[in-house]
Image (cartoon, rainbow, N blue to C red; front, side, top):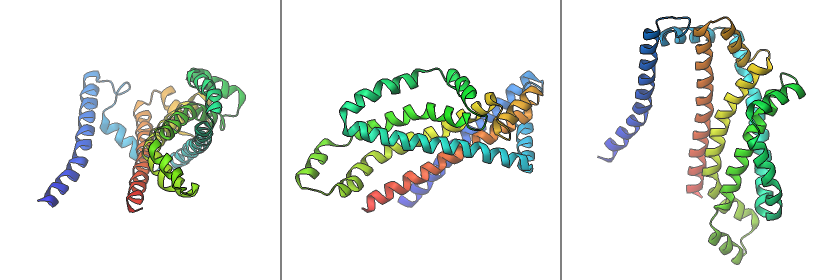
Length: 258
């Protein structure tokens, strides 16, 4: 009986997202028929057809690789610096009071202002990296700092009372405690970072990128191809989120085993 329930639950976990996608495609199809102008809103079949045509084009994979590289670089820099700053702020309350206003300022600056300034300061290749970093860093810092603040104080005091080595405290107390919240924040930030990178590429006119091809199809009123690139961007975001889901499962399993 348990096996049947387990299998059915796994099937439902797959079925529900598929139902959601089918509903979305149905609404898209109905809307395209109501508009009845392919230049404005093509059918999902036409967009999907263009997407598969893109898969056979070498330029598509170069653009995907370049955009993904920029998104990964900005995400890694954001994650590294945010984690370092969060740890220092956790250990030194005075530093937290100093850094908090800066985080608020960076978070409050309009995204368009950040994009325009970065375009002025840097090249079309590097400006999307800076833009994505400045947008991701504050949210990652807040998530990491919150995760550290939520570590059970009683467990910390107990580990100190029993003179548990710092290394063991880190691996068996802090990391298992902060991992779930931190990984969730990193997953959403990585996916969001792809969107920000693409938007930045559009405004920076970054060559051989998803953004520049989207802009080109928009200027040419090639809506089907624009939607095909959009499908590619969505698939890339889902792929990145899937990687973090697997990492989180691995971390939880490792924590249970230890």
